[in-house]
Amino acid sequence: ESGAEVLSTGGAAIDAVVAAVSSMEAGGAFNAGQGSCLTLDGEIEVDAAVMDGADLSYGAIAGVPGLSNAVALAERIRTDSPHCLFAGPNALKLAAQLDGFEPEAATPSPERIRKWEAHRRENPVAPSLADQLTALGGTHDEGDTVGAVALDSNGQLAAAVSTGGIWLKQPGRVGDSPLAGAGLWAENGCVACAATGTGEFIMRVALAADIRARVQAGRTVTEASRDALGALRER
Ligand code: ASP
Image (cartoon, rainbow, N blue to C red; front, side):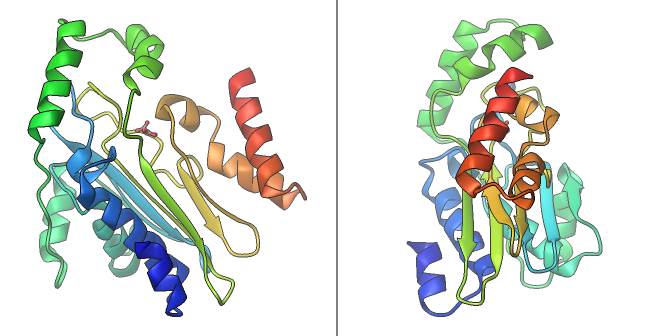
């Protein structure tokens, strides 16, 4: 609804996706912002990105501790920085220097803490890398990453994503979401897409870039998505 409101008043696709993802971060119902999955240490670390299909401009953050309005910071990086991706606590230092940007703190809700305790009881010692890969599907039990794509009345495409990652991720672990070509893509006249699922698999096949290539080669968006997912499963 937040995104549709931007579009219906003649707004740009990029503003619509940021509005849509921002509202999902704030609600706490999804795996983003306030509702983020927690790390092995019970903390929130977020990844987010935005991409404007008009000029392929892209802004992203990765592994940023305790930030709720992650997509807004990714958007300010896209518009105000010569760089694309900032990682960890230094992204918060950058945020403090941005005129008019107000970082909003994300703190785990009592419900998220109970969930974390339950996951920790099932995993009393830190899972090995191999165990983590096998268990990833199992820890994806609710509240996926949020994403939005939009096409505005000027034919502009945009995409945005925001996530807390996966339950019990090792601190510092970054998923596919902040990576253009993996977790999202937007390109006018071609496609806008946003991914959800286990980042370790999405990254390895550069899923969003694969969908883009298939659309470029003449497939419909539906065919391209289905075939790219099929290729991922096969690999
Ligand atoms: N793709 C996200 C990640 O791996 C998780 C998700 O989609 O829920 O970080």
